[in-house]
Length: 190
View 1 (cartoon, rainbow, N blue to C red):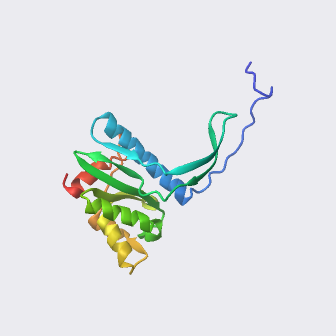
View 2: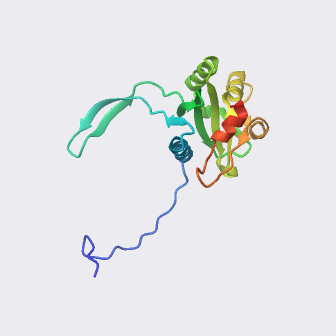
View 3: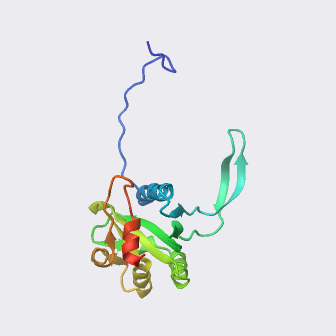
């Protein structure tokens, strides 16, 4: 006989799956990218890491291990990922949208645009990995296209057609699931 913590068998509960928020969708995309980055490192292909958000810790609770109980962001984070591939610096942002016809530019912050412009000016490779969640498609698009659209100001979004025309579709595979590096290699001639 199985002994349950309260002496009773666990009751079956029904859970309702809630729609993912934009932030959660982005987190799922970031997990796929991080898994690909782990694969690239394990196979000595590239070194690409998730950039941590800089925080300043104010208070720590040590009663149950070291647990941060109060903190604030030191400064705005730049982009999600950066690293090295064949002596070239890579820097990119991962974004997800549920829209089918366009990618909204309000998902991007001005300090990210400035950072990516600096990366390009200093010879680095800057790009976006954008998921069209409703279409089950993920694209790599050079940051220069996003910067141009952002600075132009005529549109509030980048049409899906631009991703089809100027981006590279990343097919989902087995290992890694989101093997985005071949698209970056093709786009930038690495």
